[in-house]
Picture 1 (cartoon, rainbow, N blue to C red):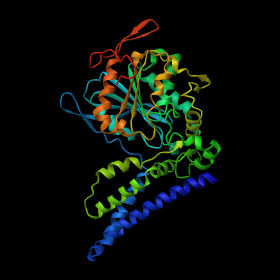
Picture 2: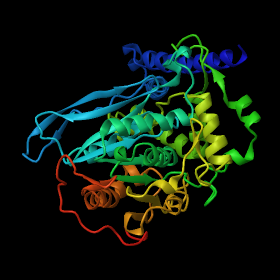
Picture 3: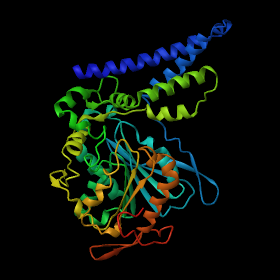
Picture 4: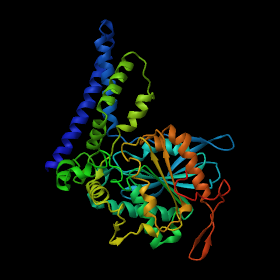
Length: 439
């Protein structure tokens, strides 16, 4: 009960601050307060508005907010978010564009399970929708999953990806963003041995810790500074009585958020101070830059304890993917078995979470893959978020990824027979890069 009490205490602090913010905003907004020439009341209301909104977002799952996309016909087409595969710990969802023919490129985005919802990749989805049929993994908040659903660790995560890839078929192009990169690589290798015909056509790994020791950062080296016992005692709590997952052991999203904020505490403090000033002066808007960013950034989800601990123990401490020793359901996965899935890695020059060198290590592990099916790109000046959601992604990386997809969308030889794609690629196939240095 000690851990459950701690979880409820954190939730109590959150709701208390939310209530204080709402109260301050209400008190400072009374008409009577306007009768006094005291700016302190305006600042109190502004502080309350920013505080209430911030703490309320921490317990709210953001909406996708993708309502339409402009088609090749120049018309707006409604976008429906359809659940294709529903499972206890996560769904496979499809952004179904109404009134548009199915796009030749079928893309599966594997979203990270690292404290934020899949909506963190909203801008990535939006940028791909005009040219692709876009699917994404939508992981559930562990606090809302009853204990009766059982455990969920990195092996279960990998098997979820295997199931999603099988469902989507062999003409799928997979893009894994950050944390899931090593497990997506393992899932592809699993299919290479168990069901080769179900493998995706291409695999793009963006800023993921394939080999965390290749270029250690404060984030990836964290696991080496503490023992697993210390980690379990200090980070793991039981979900409180407020949620359906009551009693489940989790790594709370609020703890993860505190870690995120502490990394750049001064920057965040200044951002909130400036926003309070803008609200007090009447210069802020409902969807201004600050709110747009922090509505997503502050929305956090709990991870199951077994997923968090097994990630640290096996990916970061044990380096099971980096050493090609990863085991799923008692079966050792050999990444060298990947022989005809084109693999591309993308890294950011200024990435302080998964530094350059960590993700490109995947290409060395693919010993059975010819160089013509390997490619990597190092984006100059880009940080971690920029390589999948910022200007670097939109202007440079996205076109390279789409070109890589088109280059590797031809028929595949599986078991001596040619497997033809269901639809022809949008652009004519071109020879893949002959060496890993190609973008």
